[in-house]
Image (cartoon, rainbow over all chains, first blue to last red; front, side, top):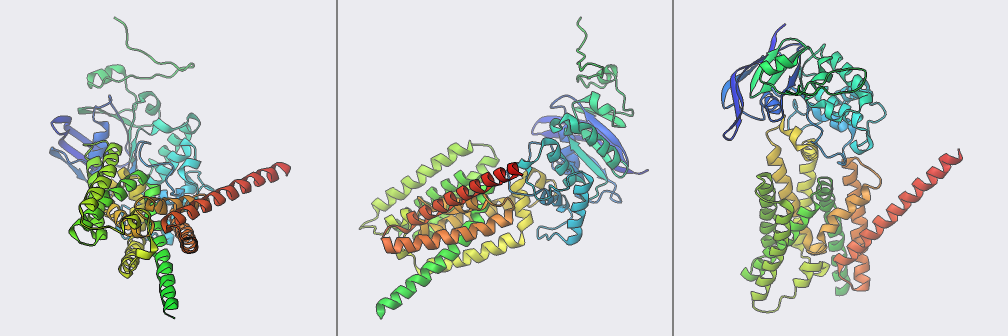
Length: 248
Length: 278
């Protein structure tokens, strides 16, 4: 097992507002890390740093260039990007995941198209190749974007709040799919839903300006408190319920 | 005899104008309709009228003035809205009226009578020069090459700009370049349809195409065809009925849209009845 990326005393800020401070973080091959933390704590900033959309103000991030070729990170953004009524087909959206390796003058080859067909089949979207997004359900849309993220066979897959637009019927399928993908790529998943993801991930990274790595998929309120990561933990039971903070 | 040559010249000019107008409008129009930039394009169109007025006043070709005004205002709005220094729709609204105001002021300040003013507002094939046709022809070629070579890059940036930024550092260059080309397309087509109506020349054909297909490049192709039918029919009617060409083209295009939409509704309706009967 080799590392994919290392962050060393990395800090990031927007203007004078420091969002990440002295982050030490290593992502290994086959990792499945849940990135949790309060809103504005720096979860998305961490992804932006990895994607190269934001440069650290100090410290550094080093990729293992044997495994992670520049610009070949799979990325599933939050649902808000992309116009669902845009006239672009499922196949074309999935193919756009290959643009990272292609120049601006890009032609899709028949190999590329076969690859897209395979990914579409793998994600259970066969028959919807020529559909546009507004003809799909939320779960199907998410699978299209997942297809775009994985068509390039990345070694690292970043997911930003994938739970946000999953319909519950599809949720289990989705996490099952991720478990399968995890056999060939490391996954970093930003989520606010600690309870749901803990059943699927291998470890946690708590981000609240500082980053604390928690090498287990089980995490308690005490851990979160110790990490300075004040978020709500949702526990599972027969009846859906939310555990609130103890009244004093 | 002389009359025949004049007519022949007129027909060739009209035909070429129709071909080039539908190619440029189809390519630029599909882009602005898909990207929901119709209002921005309206702003560009009317802002460029300021350039026409200043062109008149300075005695230079008004189309050159319009091109400068159109491109600068397009890039200005794009830039300011990216920086989030302004509310985009308000800025467009202001620019829209400001361009018209500047245009009218300078045309009134220009000594002598301005016989072509109406042709800039509503379009007239009679005032279209050979240079205008050549410019539109060159523009058609430029757009075909540009969209042909960079098809996927342009499509993906315009569909999901944020995602495109994760793999490309050329997002802004392409965004500004495409917007500038759209502005130039609008300005060159003002001679055909006029300031008031040119936007419809860009937006109606893609909307006709989108009744039948949702695939981007097919929308472009059907837009060009629909645009050509509308423009050619518009010229012919305009010539025989003696009404302004821009208005006739738009009227024809809306009629085509209405007929296409009705046929589409009927087909869907009968298919439903058929499946129910089965």
